[in-house]
Length: 454
Image 1 (cartoon, one colour):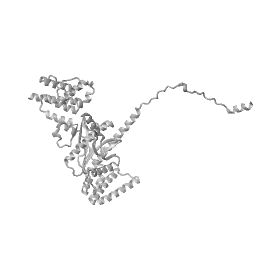
Image 2 (tube, rainbow, N blue to C red):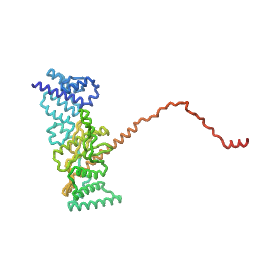
Image 3 (cartoon, rainbow, N blue to C red):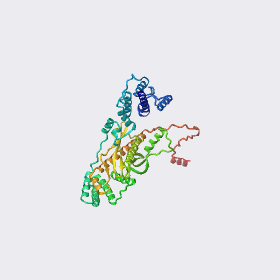
Image 4 (cartoon, rainbow, N blue to C red):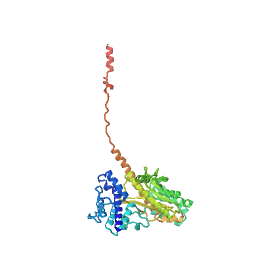
């Protein structure tokens, strides 16, 4: 019975290798000679039946040697072929490699390597999940967390925030609203006189005035539409209208492309394929740059978790989309940022690549809260929420500028690479060509004189 279990386990591992050869190590196998139709049919047959295929020349290393070891063990109970090293493989392939080696060597660490494999095969790791280290390999997660991007809230607005906080602590929100108008008038006067002013003061005053007006008028709605509208207004004030944020019943082209690929890969039967709905997305020149998801006030925690997972998948699709259409490649130090919001509380989330795995985590270490009453406004003025939103907007503006520069560079390169040649001469029929000799210029004065002499 034990031998049968071992053989089935090896058969499953062999099926994983075939999957790896097809999907995970294309960068290695594309240098190999193309396989024949007969070999392709054999691969399909073995995948369906989960048999252990014999070692074949069209398997790239180290997979070919690993297949040989398994084949020998299944047939003869042992193998004299040494297990190869998988040192130069990517994270995903290395996790698969170690998992299979653990099966071959009959080690007790199979479960640990299986967890690492689950991480790798999932393609996306959400570090915010409560049971991340229970589900996935501790060693791999620690390495990923150590390389996570570091950021801090923008502190260049602290002086203005502190002055507004002092005003609100001394008086009511109505008095604060009047004082903002006075401070803004003084700022405008300095600008007209050519005096130096803090360029961020206007932005801070606009944001706080907007929130104070909504608190006084009690116009904070609980619906998803009201929540999205409020957050978008705040981001528009901070970016001074330079970010091209769009909301409404919009669908994502990036997720549509992914769904089309899935339909083609898994023989889907959908009559029409559409992208996922987006709540608030940044775009430039027809390209999607990020997506933020929002939920209405009071939505339960399970629904928020589903939203968070959906948000990560959409932004992962956008990263792939940008690489394909804008040649915008996210390197190991680069990352995409987006908002995950429930009501008027949210967080800034990052998504980056750790080799061939997409990793999601929190960029902001505190919850970002928009105030809905006077008490909340005091906490807002003395806290880090606005500083984090400034950091978020600066990151988006930087990314938007990079994409714009890359688009301009691509257009310039396309223009320079255009083929410029003189069109070839066309044969002409000489019979229909009339060739006129140039007329000789006559002296009219000498002509008239000669006529008189005659």
